Length: 616
Image (cartoon, rainbow, N blue to C red):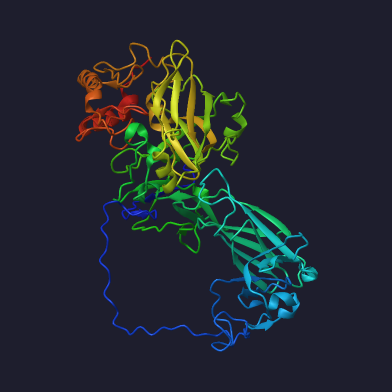
């Protein structure tokens, strides 16, 4: 009986995805020609129209009758009566003047509110602050007789709020401690105000309102943050949130649009990818390729339902980047209801053009046990795809990096035979372009992508290579388990310091391999392979069956592997191999450098492994 079709979205993204960082090879464009239109601009003095008339002006009464300049003097906009409109005080050689903003664009002279002596004497620079903490703004200024502190009595008849920003020292680390330079917006009923932060505390008068309805902060790095119904003394701690991300994919599920995942991870045009460890011992800087890319994204069948006779999908750009999307193609996969279908959605993907490989999953089973590096039992967090993540991570200074963490899984006895795979579903909180640059310019911290380890005969953890990480939100990493266990101990360990959150882990059989193999057979007995085939031995535990010539070639490739590595390519970077060579990929994390034909041979042998097994 056939089950419900499962949607598989094939996305050949043959136009690059702009990350906001230009490729190093992009040439500067020539300057455009002048338009030829006449330049007709000037400055219009509207001080008199605004009501700013006073003879107390630098330059003398005979020249002007209103304020135009305060050279060597002081002035400040501040809300002295908390009515929500910025008033103005001006001080100079001929004294001080105070002007009240009536909210209609005009200012009324209220200099009589100042002490009479300050209206005549030469006044130096001034400072406005709530000195006594009673909720209104006081004034400090000086003249020839000394310093004057003008306490504001009665200005707090209207309520006010004080906003103090605190930026994170960890994470992106792009905002200064007090958020100076950030933009604040406050709305209280019909009253709207905006300020640029110039000091630790920014006051807002609320007029007739008891409190504000909303406060919006636009931090200096461009990221907005909104607080609804803020308090009168509102401390705002910067939220760590993504400033940029790949495009988001939504589908119509029959009732509403739901978020599925993000797409176009392979196409970050010009993106610094120092996190991948290129050059200088893994601390240099590489860049994402500027060419087109293609990827395949899994869409569960229940997430995509017809709407008025059509399937409706939406791709959105909700953060900083610009996406150039050339083609979307929907591939429907019809399968038995006893079989589930997955694609490998890891990053970095295998080199070369993307190939659609469907993993037809049967006999799903969770790990027998799962603990983190502290010994805490996390199996319940990993049994189901339920948004319960292994999340006890400790962030470091840089967004996307944490203290090193481990996940130790005990897999069943069948794991490790040909046709068995480990499926890891989760998401990553990534770094960004400037953080990758910062990582490449220091030597105390480096990104360590997830590594899979198994125990050898002495009980020591032995690396099986880097497995990559989920390429964004709610993605699946598929790991071929064939031949990774040298003993009956089927524990594996995942180690990384990337901010990766695992949601579900399970072992399953590939339906094609399960149909051609007998699980009762001892997987690694000497007679594992059919006549005419032998173990490949790409490493000590590689029990894929190949012909004898392939094994001989494999041994030669292993012996020559070191000589084919680029001295500047880093351990697993895109330029690991010398020109003319590529990763073999006989097993997860296999970075032996071979010819392209040899890699194709290794892939073909892996796919044929189940058919070459001997009967028990």
